Length: 468
Image (cartoon, rainbow, N blue to C red; front, side, top):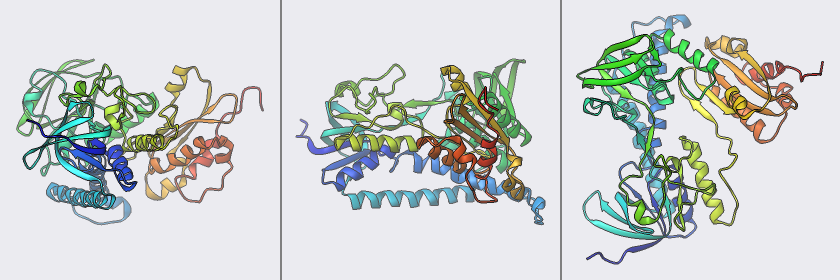
């Protein structure tokens, strides 16, 4: 017989970005709050995704710098990468982040319950505790923050090959001899370049016509050239048909390409082919929570689900798959609970891919604008024209800005180049404040910085038709 549920004001399932911040905030405000987390304290970002990947990507950057040290006047021997030390550095960072999270739970008063939760009734969760036993919890308000996991396509032999995902790739204490990456999106490209710089041979298989499918063709072409120049083999229009063998012990991939069938042999396979929401098998139907056709929690623009007083935040709600988007989800729910009227409509979400050089974009791309029938003017500037890049020998890439055709409003900005994410934020602020592009064109920006390139870029915006 099930005991009477323990009652909470707020119950959060999953401890990712949006959920943990909401729990801390509401607990500090005096609400009895509990967070149920299966494994990763703080969610995937500090444990397995954003920060660990950028940690190891930076180690790969150092390896690349050492490998080219002679270009900077340094005399060194051939670089040797110790993957155990790379892993140790990453784990030390993660341990520190977990400690920070535990401190936040303690100081906020939110209760962290480690266990696997599933709904057994509306707003009621049964938790199988990690250290044994069962607890049944009910909340006056419930927030779903269960995230996503890497999708493993149903292809012959793929699951049996025990493929790496981003999680396992960031736990390797060895260097793959030949890493075959399935997927040419952000995760696949970041890890492909990192492992190439560590010393692996790397092959990328991308089913689409270009890498980074959501980007403009000129951006994708620049990324392709960048990776190929580092010795990465890239197959576009490549459809994986079947896999033999087992990752770490050797794999053989049967692939259909525009040039015909190919058999690609590697030591390891990494699958980076999208994300699947963690919504199956947790009793959402018993909670009255509807899903969309892709399995994500169906929400309105206030992140409310089909069940009363139940919200969903982060990737499981179909929000853009970035930690900063999940954090904004927290702010939307927080403010609306306080009587506000915040919405996900019209959010300006920035994109960053942490290759080297990195890619950053905010607002519309050229393809976006054409699809929406929005007329625009475009300006483009090679990174080599930004003098800061000459001092660091990081001259690869370009900046691109879109400005409305019959006005001065900035529509979008893309940069492939050193410090792209930081420079993009300047343009994002201009868009958010409705600053005309001339404000950036005429600004006095410190020299020599990468952001200084914005002055030159926006000076290149073509005049409006009919104007001199």
